[in-house]
Image (cartoon, rainbow, N blue to C red; front, side, top):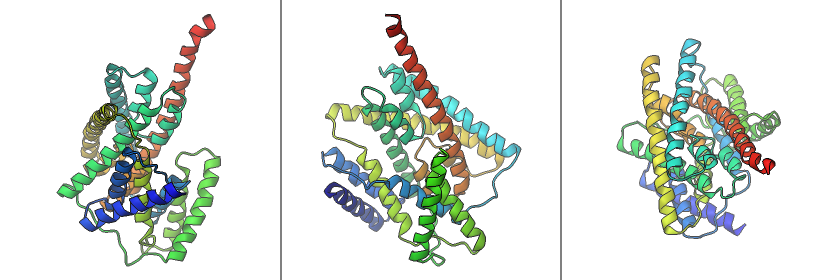
Length: 341
């Protein structure tokens, strides 16, 4: 409990400082940086149980309340999904090949090269003898990705729009929607749907928005609080390591992030040109990971968050199924010599 309270205090201090200084993605980046720094210094950091579930519920509700059905349909949607598949087909072998050259095993390289589904890859990595490299490289990739987009916003290359506040729901009604979304999300989890809290929040928010077309948003404190928790959650995954090993993992994370992001940008630019969409919107949908952060960035930049969610969910399903299948295949191959003996 002491570690949880200290971590929340650090997250609030970091997010509050970034908000006061006027940084883009303030609550998320400020909490992430300060908690990660303290974690690297050896401080025991920990977030409350079910923090990620709460983050996904709030983001799902936020998206559902402003969901739009004005998405490309038919052939346009097929083009976009085709671009996503080609993006994955380019990213995975490129990054996996780089990591194999650095001496990583096939399993480590496959899991670390995955452009997204961090939680799923971390769970699969738990079957390895040393999952730390996979978990930290994936975490560093997401942190660098968020920081890079924040820099783009700070430089003014993409405009950040204020979320409407004059139509905010009351605290009680916001909490009631959150409770309903929680029940629905856990029901969807029984069906083994990916990111079920996020989908539950979207459904509840969408139904409510259908009855209140004036465009409501959640109480003003809920989204910043969820970003504080997300930043703290990412920061907690960083653990103290020998300086040389830490620098090496930071470098590998940077290489993975840059390679995956550039590939995503190239395919996003091509698809955006073909469909006459914003390049930034398509890139958020193709970006290598950080589902919750990418949805938040879509919200604060005025892009279409339901478009972003759709593509990320498709990718999570593909990576989860593919990653699980490949791990079983690698383990079966490793067991063959033992059977022969």
